Amino acid sequence: MHPTVNIAVRAARAAGDVILRYHNQVDLLTIENKSLNDFVSEVDKTAEKAIINEIKKAFPKHSILAEESGETLGDDNFLWIIDPLDGTTNFLHGFPQYAVSIALLEKGITTHAVIYDPFKEELFTSSKGEGAYLNDERMRVTMSLGLKDTLIGTGFPFKQPQHLDCYLETFKAIHPHVSGIRRAGAAALDLAYLAAGRLDGFWEIGLNSWDIAAGALMVKEAGGFIGDFSGRDQYMETGNIVAGNAEVYKALLKKIHPHLSDELQR
Image 1 (cartoon, one colour):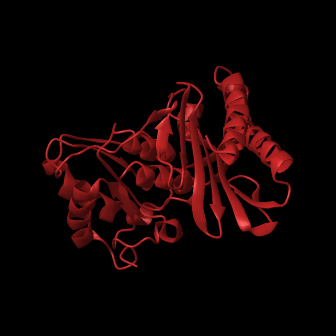
Image 2 (image 1 turned 30 degrees about the horizontal axis):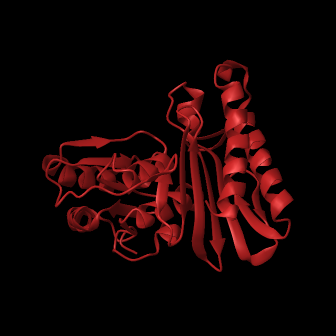
């Protein structure tokens, strides 16, 4: 494992300890509503501080973009993108599908990534050019030749209800051609599951960079493809993503594109 990944793993496990400490005490937490259907608790904030502390000890001059505390400026060549608790709504309801997501971008390119599910004790790691791993076992995307018999992940646009009608049209276009569609509520884990071969494909509208950065590297390092709704690599900017192996990726794009609004085609 790359030394930088070791630092990220240490940070992710520190955040995981915070999360597990509270997972049976959710009723005692102070919960704020940041915006429509977007919640934050002191668990998110405390876990984020634990991650930042570990990163700053090792790389005091690096920049950090974190979901709760925003951006800490430093060396522009190195940017850590952090989601201390992807799946906060799941966590607050005791639904055990949530994770810590950490990625490092070097000159705008994601080079290292960690996604850690503390409840299931699953550690997903990746470095550019070195593959993707689940608990030290190499991950590969599935070999599906199209949408037939596939299991596809997705996410509902709860935070952007203006896109709901378009989303439902894409859902209806895909649904008849696959074995199942799953919405588990933690995009970082969905992408990690895709890299691990547990899902064949994935699409979602309106994600943030901290939802995507780590999982996107894992998908690519596991042999998959990821892009925005026009098949470009602008998914970090648009927040709209499609992912899968080569055949599933192409098939999802083909089904989705005719149902997009002008805004979602940009």
